[in-house]
Image 1 (cartoon, protein in one colour):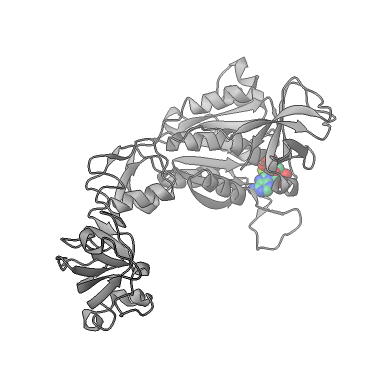
Image 2 (tube, rainbow, N blue to C red):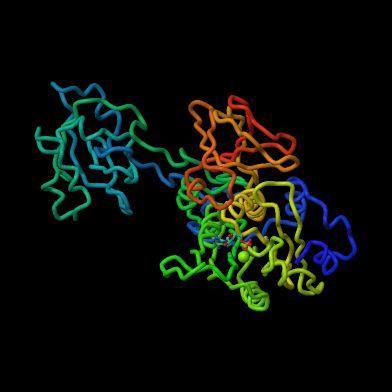
Length: 449
Ligand code: AMP
Ligand code: MG
């Protein structure tokens, strides 16, 4: 379908529909229509990578009780004062405190309780003497028997839980004791709204007893590729057929951006079939991504299926962008819920670059993540770029070396070069008004991570 016909069918007699859009205009049109998803409550592990939308306060002190940081003996400080190798303090071992012990023997004058790391400090005790500073309760034997600590009290006598212990170093009050609340006190802020939940945050939430948190969810992204020539990987190619790589690549891109992505098998160049497929997918999609069928060839199936929708069905604009690759783009909203739809061009490199520039920022905006863009750095381009299309922002595949700050081109400008794409870690940006880049010139480089 020609762009003139498209404007007649869709946008009406609007000459502006035919104009070239800049990359920045297209991005702001998209982001202007994207609102963060409504928060939901998720189990901790499902919330990983999501933005917390509540301030989480600590319900109870952490640690919740004074406990030992060492395997050793809980003692009263006065009882071990002045103890040394020659004149050890000899204390009566009156019991054992293991991690998880609920009932604890009290430590009276001249007494000690054998204690394990994480066990509550028994009443009466003021400090913990590490087992290495003692005879291990074996009358001078090696201090290595604590490993058997968690065994039943029936074996306690044999392993030194009662009897005597010789201590040959003094301790000061609270030594080797982790105080209740020393990590974080009750009522303190554990995590502020806006925190992007990483593994340590998840750990903290679990430690303070939170099973779930309120976050912005991951968008559900449905990826549909189009093209009569597409065969899934694993199936033999007939004449003129190629493997569908875009749907896999774009699904991976969406996951990489933090989304929950679903790949739908490729749809042939049949507008009715594509419409039906997209309508079916609407129920599980926060975002729809299609590939192919948006240029000016004879089988522009996405354009054909989604141009000139009735208002109730949504609307998708197809436009030409001042960029290379990725000139033809479609963006709009589909269905009653106005699900954002990105119609990306079919050439694999075009699809990839389009995803990076347009879809990824939108997904991050839906999740409430900032910044929405990949980091851009300045780098010296070690290769000359002989020619770049005038009036179009070009994104070339590059290999960026953060050590030297240099970037090299990888492969050429061809938008079918998937091997070069796989070898790249950056996009070299050649501005609209630049038609050649001499080697040694500084350029903007988008780091793909
Ligand atoms: P189209 O935009 O549909 O005209 O496709 C442009 C080019 O990209 C053609 O060479 C297609 O064969 C190729 N292409 C389209 N979709 C895919 C896909 N899913 N995987 C790999 N190549 C594709
Ligand atoms: Mg096609």
